[in-house]
Image (cartoon, rainbow, N blue to C red; front, side):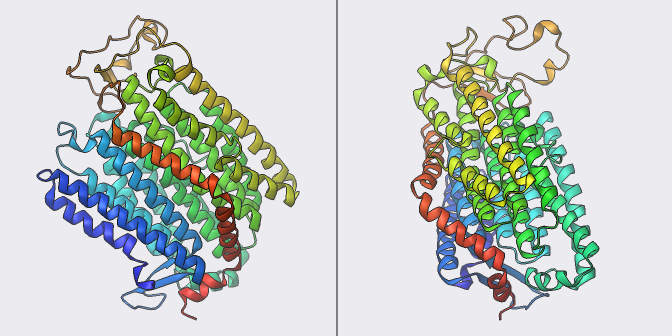
Length: 549
């Protein structure tokens, strides 16, 4: 069983070369390879999750080199759960992208790089979840960075290049900080292996431990978009195509949360920085959701809700009790699926209405009732309406905060409740503007080719009479079908359709079903996360498996 641990990393990497071989000549073969490989990764992830739950952690030392020399991959309950959910989500997003046809837009992407880059991204995510040492964790981050830059800048338009450059600069800064932290850790302990670090870090002076912990937390907080290190996210994610934005927002930020959870429980038990984490969690919740309230573009609004709800997960990590860890893990699983779904729905709204600017939308509940349903269910789930999984995760975290009874815990409980109410308000705002109210006069008809957004380069110097949403003045009329649209911040043209593409709709519905499964199977899920939290706090099973004891 241990032999299958590296396969979720190796299969996508091997398929990348095969996918590049076929390139643009045999697109159907390229699509088949991607779908088949991600389906295999999902199946392997489920096997690993069942095996880790029944028999304890699984590990493999690549090349049969024992720590600290070799590369160690470990699958325990936490990493296997994260791997399973991420595999399911990435498969759904891939199917969505096939329905959107983004890999066939030759004028924008003359080289068939989407599938290879996407497979590399999946390999990087799998590598970070299975990494058993800091160096391999760093390698996983860098694999994701390379693939992320390619996906963010698909099409090569100026706005996308600028947004991608911002993302890369922030990521490179965090990578340098991560390398520095790894070097300090190795100099102080003589190893980067998680099992050995769990035993040796406790022998260091308290100041050295705290410095290493703070540096690692800073790196992972940047990846997770935790306030105040999240300013890059709202400007970077919304510029990418809907499938890319969905997988980034739903999954990549959770990689940072996973790393925080892993290192805080395994390497730095004792919750020395718990108060700092709870302050950061509260600030992320409140400031993120207030930012969402102020937005009128759906993608930017969802980006701010993403920042806000990361605070719930950090709340559980900062509280550092078994109940809190269990609640945080439930919320991570829930948020990956729901946030991904909402960004996929945003892509469908853009396809139907020609824009994600809420002031230019309306009447979608009557014009596209299926689209309204696809938005309503995950929106209520994100807001935490009972009995959906968002409510289950928040309830677990709040109960853990009440049980703790400290001042910070009570502040987080109050902040969680307020954030949940404001999230409901934000989702109601989207519903009222885009779905419930009557369609505005300028709403595009089906078959119209529109600029994908309202802030193209030409709009930068627009005068006061050209403010979108204030009237007809300054608003360019829809182009007839087949017309050429100028490059915008979104980076591509949008052809509106009265009937939503089946694959895009089916993939979005699949992520909704996955999120609803967390509600239907809430009891087994919470029991699993309880066992996971207990295993994380014991640390012994993980350490003994890594060190072959």
